[in-house]
Amino acid sequence: MNPSGLKLAYLCAVMNAMIMGFSFLFTKIALEFAEPLDTLTFRFAASFAVMSIPVLLGRVRLEYRGKKLHKVLLLATLYPVGFFTLQSYGLQYATSSEGGILFAFTPVLTVLLAFLFLKERTTLMQKLSICLSVSGVLFIFIMKGSRIDWSNMTGIVLLFLSCLVVAGYGVLARLVLKSFSPAEITYVMLGIAFLSFLGASLAGHAAAGTLDQLFSPLASGTFIVAILYLGILSTLVTALSSNYALSRIEASKMSVFFNLSTIVSIAAGALLLGEEVRMYHIAGSALIFAGVMGTNLLGKKSERQVLNTNRAKAG
Image (cartoon, rainbow, N blue to C red; front, side, top):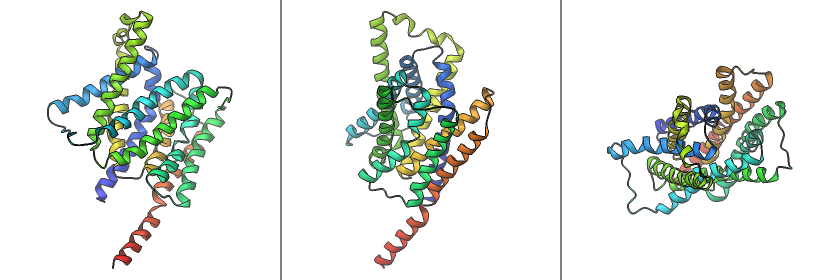
């Protein structure tokens, strides 16, 4: 594998986590002006429109002819459509803290699915590192007083399914990226998500007789700024970067970077909202960081040993 391509893949994974960390803040801002479904519609409208510009100008070439497009359609159904739908309805019954706790387990689910469907193997130290990263997120939430209320079983199940969907997306993307470029996958994902959420939003407003209110949030400059961040950076850029990273590194290694967004969210809250950073934030962040580093570094020795063994057999 090209070393420069691998470095870029890890850079994309880190950038992805940083953008996701700030997305929680901008989502809160957007939801002050619009309903969740309308926010998703505008979010994916912005991302799809921006990516359509270089596509229409011929700067980005997409070639779907002769390829099995149903694989990309399935991928888009998992994420973003499946994930955001399950998450939105899940958060109607459960709290955002419960969602954050459950989402921390996504790397564990990814490791299991990657082993079952991709035959990706992780060393014992990598498994322990993933658990360390997850424990860092859980430690922060628990110290904040967050708990899972098992009486909210409907919300918990839906949020767990949203995590399972993200894990499945990471595994399926590894397979689909063998036939499609990151740009080809991203464009279909954004287009399907935009049409799906637009249709659902229009249907909801038509049933409620509030179609005239669909575009009223656009009167706010604050809402537009939030949507541009969510649509361009937190959707388009993260989709392209995650798809590129998944084309270069294993799904299990990529998934653990999601937990870095917790650190970024803490920093964003402190810098932009003046939220207090306590010692448990620092301790939990250290565990997350150590877990991410361990997952991506502790497997290299094993991989080199396998490579050297294979070379020796070939020789």
